[in-house]
Image 1 (cartoon, rainbow, N blue to C red):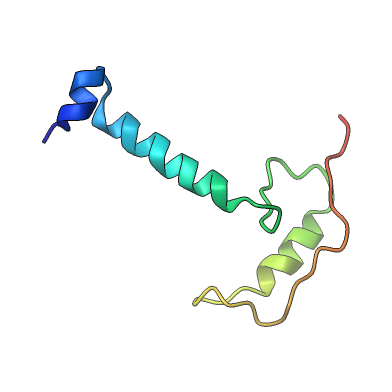
Image 2 (cartoon, rainbow, N blue to C red; image 1 turned 180 degrees about the horizontal axis):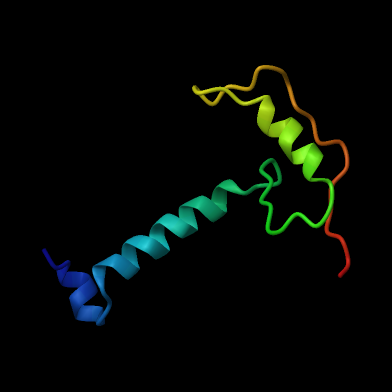
Length: 73
């Protein structure tokens, strides 16, 4: 089914849905979430954090990232 508003604006429905979902996800990245692009070094730390996860999504123990930032390339 074609969304009449999307058709009126000349947009594909899939594109509208994608942009809406992406915008919702980006709003959730509010300083409490971490996004890894490419891990250059320290993959052992990523594995340790990953090991604290469970099937339900609740971590086994509290994981705190005390220092973070962007490394210059």
